[in-house]
Amino acid sequence: MNSGNKDERERVIDDNLKRVFDETLDEGIPDRFKDLLQKLKEQDSEKGTS
Image (cartoon, rainbow, N blue to C red; front, side, top):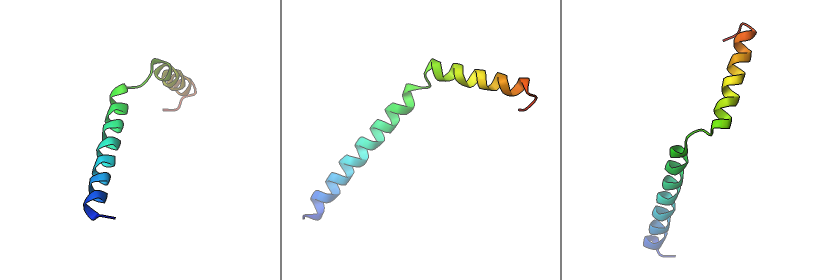
């Protein structure tokens, strides 16, 4: 296997993984999940924990 081809493939894979990761970060948290987190925080504060 040619080292140059392997390096190029690894670069392409790295670029694609970074792109997908960045896109996932940009999606944000779904409203349903935010609501669930808020309910859990409220339950904790009702119990006197923080």
